[in-house]
Image (cartoon, rainbow, N blue to C red; front, side):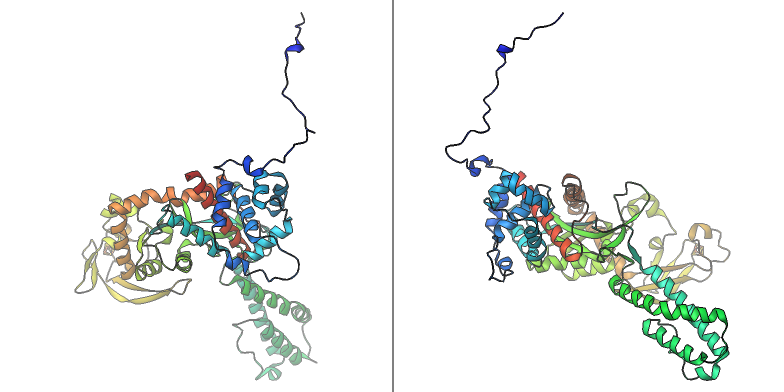
Length: 515
Ligand code: SF4
């Protein structure tokens, strides 16, 4: 049976796309009074952009107003639009962008140049003004900051790496072979080579290899030379100086790092948390550090070494430069608990709520009651020795100095037992051969004691509770909600601008949800 539909009852709303309006619509009226775009507009309007304006040389054709350009780019970042090409498109399609730009349409090249050239060197100062606005409005105090880091992938090819280790290994091989060639030459032309020996083969570089090969060539001239050696010499003459020159340039770019990417030499290969294939592949990335308060970002820095320990001083100094002062307290996880960092914070009167390795472990009963742990051995201060559970003395055996990657020197006191041979509990006590030896860093132990006292105080427990909610959550917002996991530009300078824009837009977006 067929059901009949009575179409006479269907009514459509009026649709006249070609209707001409008597008055043009006002964009202003179409924008919600509480939309975040209004916060961007209001905040950027209140900033002093003198330093940015100074970057315009004047003359030539007129430029788009920097205030408008900044608003548009910050709003792009706030709306998860990071590509200048897409921002340029939005300026034609999106009423919020149109309203911000007052219907001007800078193209993607102009936007890109503004981001990477005009904002270079001035964005952090502009960002600091935003943070000071937050302080003035009582949203944050800047008295306490939560500091943490994450790795953000660089815009670089994952397979174009240069490893410091392979340069070192290859140079060693060249060194070995050049020594062998020299030895052969000596066996054939000892007299000619006398007084011509290079100044050792330890430091090997382009010039030295070139000179050594020339000397060998001269010495072997007219002599009967083994065919294989001849072929080797010819290969060496052609290739090694070039290879060593390349290694020198690469070592310069490495600047003490273990690796870099050929497509972005500022990026270093790191193990990333985001490892979807689960194969532990290293990726070119930057170590991004942020400090937050109430989930607002107050400081950001970018680093090329993986360890967070090495970043704290630089980050704090960046804060000092931005605000002419340091916060009263800094709260971090155990990645920052080093002697150097504790010393820096104490010397600068910053309370360190900084965990150290084993902070959680040492709270356990097992740890506290382990009689063999160096920290649990009885110490005799008057006579400067430790007493082991078997009543044997570990006496002072000298002090060693250790220097870390930053050049910071640590003093380690070494104590050694006078006879562990035949001890029945040796297996429980330590694994190494010989008598037990312990290394004690007095200064670090004292810093740890103070940190422990703070971290286990009422305030410290509260800070520890807040830390993941404060700073770690911000990384969650940036990576998950804002889907920002990879830089678009290359090089430290440009990626730092991107990071600054992420921080800037994050703060405004947070402010918008607060209002
Ligand atoms: S191994 Fe040596 S240090 Fe350890 S408990 Fe025995 S005697 Fe003492």
